[in-house]
Length: 205
View 1: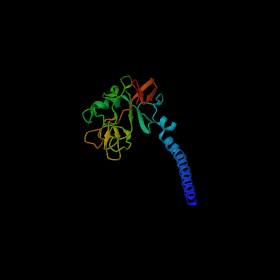
View 2 (view 1 turned 90 degrees about the vertical axis):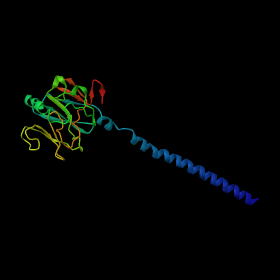
View 3 (view 1 turned 120 degrees about the vertical axis):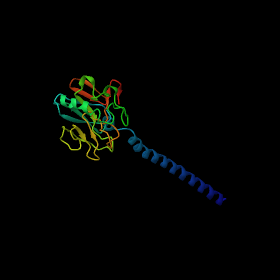
View 4 (view 1 turned 180 degrees about the vertical axis):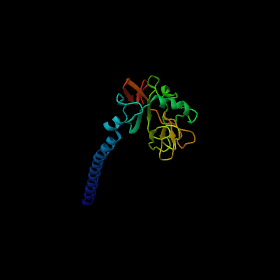
């Protein structure tokens, strides 16, 4: 009789231990899961990093360039002079993709699929992502005609990493490592002097 009682006590004790550890494990699982779930949800900073950004170009003089950050990338805004725009006709025959037909990383917006790669109402303003399409370096420039030996007589940008060169519309010259032109992000004018990058008539990128 005492042996049977001992077995019952052992079974009862084991059952209580299993229940206790199961509950503790469940609580621990919840405690561990919450921080991980929180990290999966995008933070406000992360949301803001992908949001459209505005740029005031009222103080940008002809020949000057400014840089704004969009999605962690540098976006160049260059106000081109009449001479800079005229140089694009010459480089048409020297660039690999004059019509921006290669959608390698970011499809060129239809309103920028032209010689100047800009909106028709603001041809002087070039808006491009300042990252070389080869290995992600940031090109230098813009250089004036004859100011850089790798560009020769052509004005434009030079990637110092592997020597890719781009004209003043961000189009890559032929026989260079970069596989495509500099990306043009979606953008639109809120006013004549204010641009929003990352958003256009079709919505946000």
